[in-house]
Image (cartoon, rainbow, N blue to C red; front, side, top):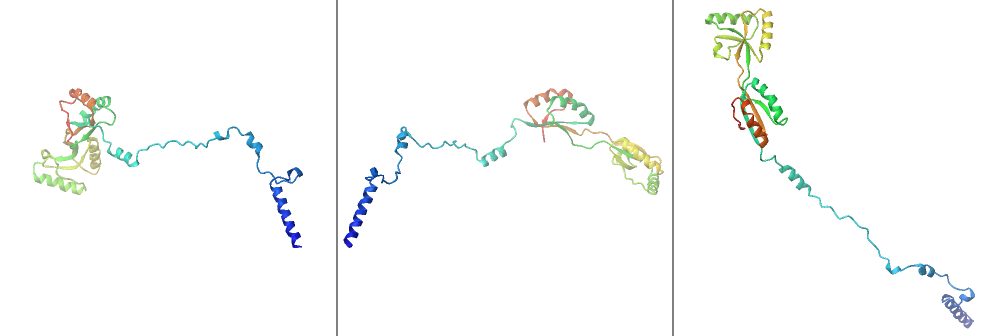
Length: 229
């Protein structure tokens, strides 16, 4: 019995070996074919195939952010410009010069800057020949509830000022209102005339602007260009 079992195992092993090696293919007994030789036969020069990596654009060098900011901060106006001024002019002289300046200099490159006191008109009472006469006027003004003070100009003293105004029209309007309240013998007078108080200033005059201003000297009333203070 044991001999028969051993003999059967030997025969089974021999049959499996023959089947695995394809020795029984002629009898229709063979393992399934895993290779595909017909596909390999259709390949054309498989040894020429190469793996190509995709190209990437070279990095673009960018300036550091702090460098760009530093360049913006350190940017300065041209060094060939100069601040120039000429004066002083009255408002009337400035009005006559403005059209010439507008036609010869860039817009916004010049201005008239005030440097003094402007004209002043007052409602005036006086001069009084005695202190008693002025005291009577003071008492009358207090009864009308009108404020007063001595004039600033010594030429108008002794006298009384009932208010100062930038124009004669404003002073006359105020006087009419005071007259309606019973004021008498007051008048509008010029306490301080128009004084030269305007400077022509060119903050950043380049060479071309300086040349043009030099040519304008006949219209500058003999005033010379000078560096800004």
